[in-house]
Length: 514
Image (tube, rainbow, N blue to C red; front, side, top):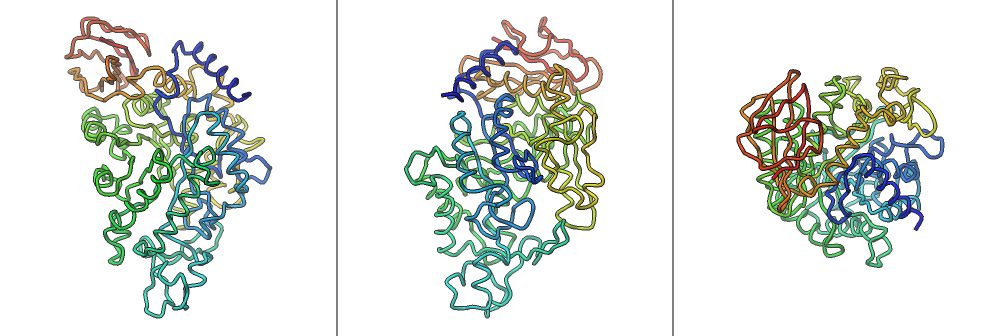
């Protein structure tokens, strides 16, 4: 009851601040927060971001307007990013316990939010039971759970990129092999594993269960291995079908291995619910009108009915946008397009405050990506209670950290500044959640005769919202080819006069129209 009262109070405050009446929960579109939990918030002082720390910061995420949380893998692994499991059934002790995980899930659901888990069960390390029992043991019950290069089962097969081991940022080497996804036993195991996370206590209530999964590096022909072909039909469809028998409402999000792929084959042949809009991500950051029109038309308008595209500008494998683009006004433009254009927006943690990070080619280890996954910047000083400096004093990524004191890139420095990037994200999200057309409407391009202004219409039943974005650093005066009977300003101050609008450099204007 206490959480419900606090949630209502927080909604009331934000309605007053932004002048919008937020839609009922059932009618709001999702806004996902993609969090690298090891770097988010440390609850116990060991410098590791953890599950209890994330639970303590749910209020922050709700205040931002987030409805759903996507975690990186939780299972026990030697890699700091927790891909490549030692044990799929054990939660990494640095994140907490199973009880901590269940408490987090229940609290998320009490707040009306959702949680998605990242899963990659295509690979295991030498510490995994299947490896330890099956290597050199033809009589092992796990003999067909992993692939081998020889009939004696002494040499486990390579993994992605033909690798047998991965050099870690801490100087260790982690041996990894590929799971045999053609094995019926492996399919049954995955069904059992995923089903546990959907309904841990098997009571059919799902208050303790995940609302869906992100399938990392999903492929029909895994790493182009001849033994692992036709996996959409033979593995992914049976798995997804089995999981939806447990809870038909879960959502399956697949990450296509080829980032140039729009994911339509996955929708059709793998029966997944959502894909990642990589093409649109590239277009958003290009600030090129024609690219935006082309990619949005393909990504959004051609998306099959009942399916969804995750719209993002950053993730854990990409250089952060604020490193490439230091102009905060352009960062705001990208945020506006991402959050208003359609699909399901996914915000990578720290994106909302303009955190920086770029992949660096240090001696080739998984430490190269640490700059993309640094500690969330809660404080102006760069450090303080809960700061998750798990990589402290571990290498060049620490020596050359992007986290600098008093540089304007922290929640503390931005939360009380009405013109900050953080508050712009917050404003955009509440605008989105206040209008059905922006939450759930169809996307359509609106031509305006100006090569520097990208404009589009979002339509839901009788509700229409028009968005115009000046992609340039000079004033633009687009003329809409479509006539609107009336227009009410929702964002910005620009009025539409005889189909013409005056847009300042990098201005985003939004109207409710008829």
